[in-house]
Figure 1 (tube, rainbow, N blue to C red):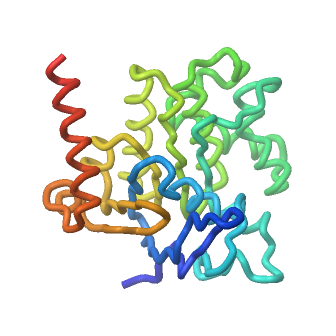
Figure 2: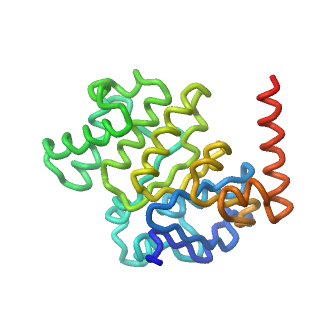
Length: 253
């Protein structure tokens, strides 16, 4: 088997006396989509943010393409070119247009010419169905459109892996499907992805592997049909049971 794109080894993180991540071990392989699920406050988003050092882990290792991002002399900006990040709050610049948001890192980080950056950015926008909005201000876009621009910004840098931190949580329900469709298409194209999500249907149908976290630990992981259909741990079973009951309630309305 090939080396994992992402290797997390005994990762710990605390805020004061509160231990938020309790020795996380997780490997993600090339082309794999791993969904991380679990109750709010279980450490899911903190784990992602430690994987590109937006949060500083207290101990442990994070290797991206076999390079330790916590190594003393690591070029963090160079490493972050390989680690795409899509946020729940979009994190776009409202005062510049869509094309400018996508070309910014290409010009400033990769030092591409304006012409090269525009070509790559337009290709990325076309992949997410947003090339027709290239000249629009991001403030003029719907939440779903802004999130698709955020995804385009990440894929334009050709990262080795993209981390999605609850990418649909800030969206109105009717906008969620469009963003999830884009993510599914990326998965089918071979992009390596880690997705923290509350969209249980997406996690069940699209993931290669599902990881259930609770209280700062990975409680269980496996194929979607295993985690959702026959969970082995009582905490996982309780969480999945609530999801099934909520889905049934919505369908019954």
